[in-house]
Image 1 (tube, rainbow, N blue to C red):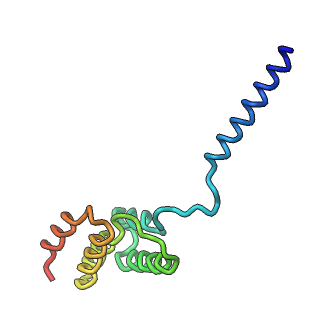
Image 2 (cartoon, rainbow, N blue to C red; image 1 turned 135 degrees about the horizontal axis):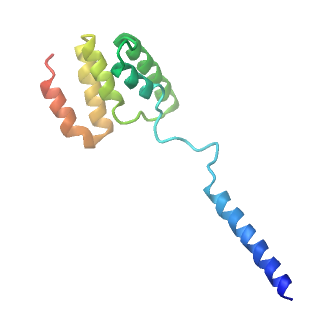
Image 3 (tube, rainbow, N blue to C red; image 1 turned 135 degrees about the vertical axis):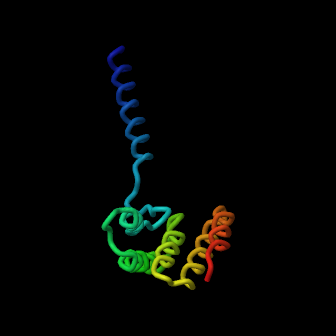
Length: 123
């Protein structure tokens, strides 16, 4: 009688554990919160001595942005601000303002800093 009870407890424990693990598993159809694309690599390139040029970084980020927009995916925090910095390096003033405004619109918590950046930016 005791072994029958013990085997039921073991089986119940295994079923419970499998159920809990199954509930924690991620599904392949789950979507990420942001489309990072090559953003992290481009930030690294901008900080690295001898990294890719601002034009190459802009090209990669614009390409990733178009892909994300086509899929209806959001870009991560800082994406537009970083792109604005790169546009500033190549003298594209209109795009600098546009990207800083886009960062502020997507992430309202960045408004104070983006307004500060916009006030320091001279067209």
